Image (cartoon, rainbow, N blue to C red):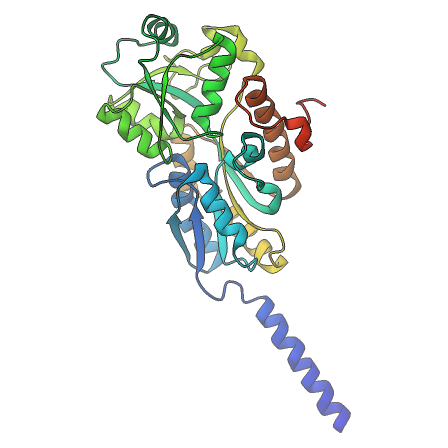
Length: 334
């Protein structure tokens, strides 16, 4: 009888452990958005997360945490408990932190729950700017060196990569860079006249373009975009851009390495389902984002390829602090 009682107790204990393992999430999840309100990362995360919450059966409380080109948010999550209750909602910047001398961490310290979507860069200007095309902008910069104010989100952000491409192709770019905590604040500054030009992801700028509060100069892609068919691809102005394009930012959800499998599995399934929701798909496609919805090894392979292309672009443009080769980042194609 005593053995039967002990056996029953052990079974109950195991059953309780299994129930605990399957109880995730047992409390609110903190979602740390790497950039400011109104930007492209913020838009993507606040659009998909309600649908992921429904699939997860839990609550994700989102908080914008800006600063240091996204490194403050990344470090916050990297230093939090690896329990699945602190999630990073980030963009591409961490993949070149080491090359740009911004820190020693990148997404190799994280598990990619889902790479949701990627964007196409768009160069926009104030509606009354004295240039309406990429070629006219270049001519204006040449005639007015050190005058045109470009919005920036810091080293490693989309604007810095786009301007690195421009510097490589044009042999220099004599403009003023004005920093902002994300493309949302920068686009607001553009509309207010604080800056003249902004390289931004099409998805964040397209509604402003449609409203006439800013004008597009060029799409940074190898062909025109169906959402703005009258806007030339930058390769129409200079074929030198073909060496770097197509290129674009991406948006993903991450947790720390070491997070329990139960949490990773639940979050991965929830965000995969959320990314397929008709409302999210319609919003992303309507704003010119390309849906990805990838995780696991496929996401890791994408991150490695993106890091290789971008790190070497920044290095060859003379904008990196560290040589990618010294960091073990291979050249594209190697």
